[in-house]
Image (cartoon, rainbow, N blue to C red):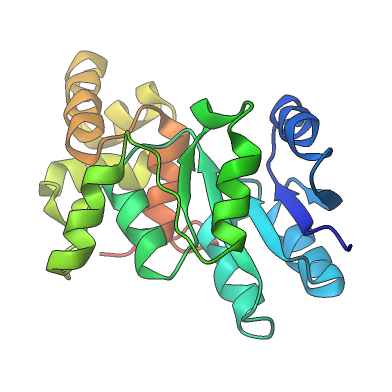
Length: 217
């Protein structure tokens, strides 16, 4: 019997090794990638049954992989496997039809069962984010979380997403580093994020920043 074919998109080698360890006895791991362009090219070439996909990867975001692959290979299933428990991440992925959303705490003996569930048409969701599924059923607001930031918080987000340091951002906005840190704390709390990396990725995904680094008004 042919075993299901799995592709892993993850930019941390240790995480890829962990996934392979728990899945290789039950599935064929046909390939791996750590960035958007390589992932899209290999997935379209190999056409696996399911892709385990991190949301924050080199060259873009996990949603970019899904959208590009599905333009030509709609049958490929995508199962998000990420550290993010952000509401906006969960809703974005579910709204574009991801076949499950797992946090990385499930990398263990239960992972093969979750993958099998997705392959069989289920939609496994980690309990940490399961409550957000109700938001899908009730309809997602057209206003994204990032749109709810204040004007000053948006200015901070644009600069941080473009690679400015805290000191450079504070200097550009004419505020102290301490005040900037307060703004960043408020931004992280409102968006449910934990790092500059996550904030930058969200800014690009939301269209606040172009891929060439230009800020939108």
